[in-house]
Length: 144
Length: 59
Image 1 (cartoon, each protein chain N blue to C red):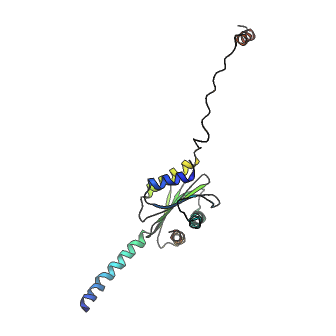
Image 2: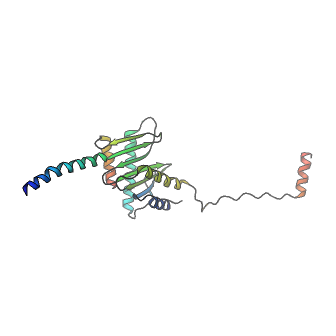
Image 3: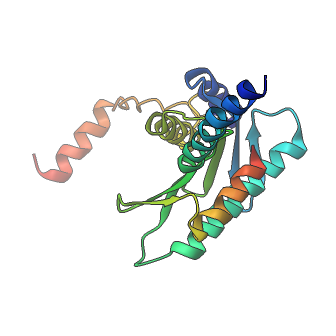
């Protein structure tokens, strides 16, 4: 699934999401629900900054930060990361955090899945018909 | 009129203060790790302030 479709699904499922951006490791925006490119880039930058600051202050014992929620009076900011991709979403105040994280992860995983339309599953190979002559030579080799 | 104003201030002031404090207490950061653990940083904690400030800029 492409990133724009995944985000469209996310906003359809989760009505509390006000804006969402999918980004890569470097902070480059892959897809966004926002029309304003500058705002999308700023949200992506904030996601990287939040993850960076949390990683720096709370790195311990080899555990890795996978998701983060910052709850404010005005709303909440959610960040989740998985296999080189990150997703950041802003919501209205007091969202259902568990559900929202689930939806964000589902969105990220749908991006990781291979495209079903562009790479159809290979057809099973039809067994080749063998001529009677070939079968006869096989029998001779095996001594049957 | 003055009495009414004084009463409003006497009642409304503390109510506003308590509402504001309750809202501030709701401000927090949850960090989730790959081993299943979670850390909560409450409003007022020095570690939380930087993260909350970053988040505020996004909203």
